Length: 275
Image (cartoon, rainbow, N blue to C red; front, side, top):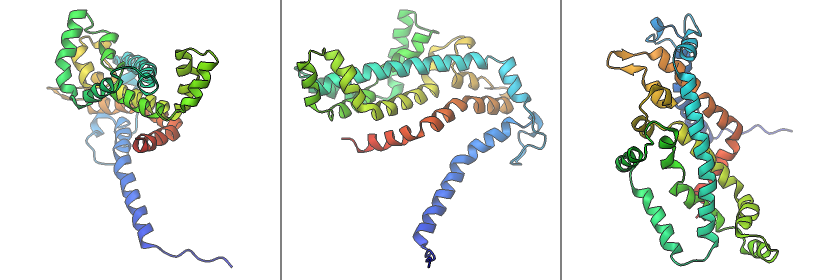
């Protein structure tokens, strides 16, 4: 005879808190999508659903603004930066974890020390360097500060330390080069960490605002966050266009999470447990 599940107040409280948290997190996205479908006259209407839903806002953003160009700029910057971080951070992490050379620990500590420097303090040196090298208003000018990251090196180095030295020694006996050991043996052992690093790097560069806003001068070179900010000015804010463009801009982020949510969650857990 089946037994009826007993009511547990603690479990009910946990589910209630989770449900409330879900509402708090999801409501801004719902309001953004709803506002994107509202005519300009309804944008300040507090109704949850538009009374006369329309796709005109999205059509205007796609055809009468440089949104497609901004979208492409953001994708190029985020994709290239992610590839660069994946390669260089993993290479440096491997060298610091598996190679024995003088000053290795000092170099690692110095790299970690850069994490304590606020980004705002680096903006002026970055801009002076970009100006002197002619990188203002270029893709390279947007990307170069993030092509290699201290956090990525730290993350990869911690996981590389867990790769058995016996595997590398066996490869050396077979005549595998040091780069081959890194590429063919060590790197496949830390796929979850690399997946998490790539995802976080892509999302971080997709949403970057401060440095692109400073280094970009022409409208055609703007990334999505900087371009969307143009819809707000001293004369007022075009909220219907802001909401429509924001809804379009969040699509890649949602797709990345939907496809790679397992790796994202696993990466968060791993980065929190690995020491």
